[in-house]
Image 1 (cartoon, helix red, strand yellow):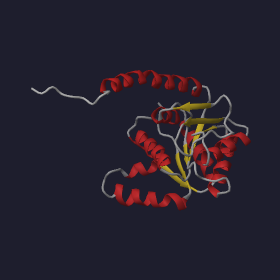
Image 2: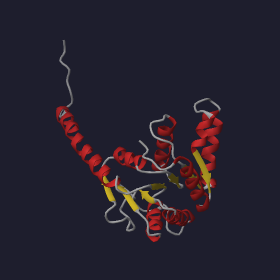
Image 3: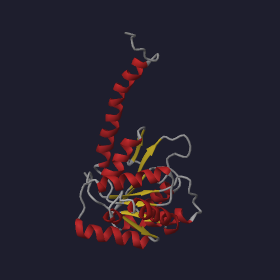
Image 4: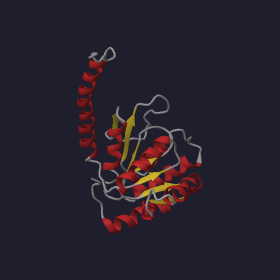
Length: 228
């Protein structure tokens, strides 16, 4: 019988995979220790490419300011664009401003509006995503790209499958999101791939007042609690 051959360096790769467990564990431990102290927060997602003179940047800044005035902190991905706007609004409002940074090949770099003791750096997307979900009392989703959609659908999946407790998921910008929502209804729902009640997981709004109203009404009924 012919002996199975592996590519050169295969055993070294497997060894590196084993040692990576300790780095992953270290990111979880550091994240849990720091994030467990921040108090109730709302995550703001959106494109890193949004410029400061664009309307969604300004709207995200206003939403973040109103969120901290309502007694929550703000968590973002720590980078530029919508993330910067979220941290800036929280900073101006005098509230908690958290940044979960990750090294990316293009647009990611820290923004200057993160609290100095609440800036965390991650190498692994999946660890960072756990921090967003575990320590957020709501998601405010501004217009964005693949990363924004990734966070949105992961949260919806976890809630739908009862892996985490339900929390508000708020899409900001009807003109941006309505095409996606219509596709979800006309395709996913019509083919029976989701249930009608799954559509209740998301809210579509256009103003900071609507965001605060949704957060306040939800937590008046359910109270604040960890997500899992």
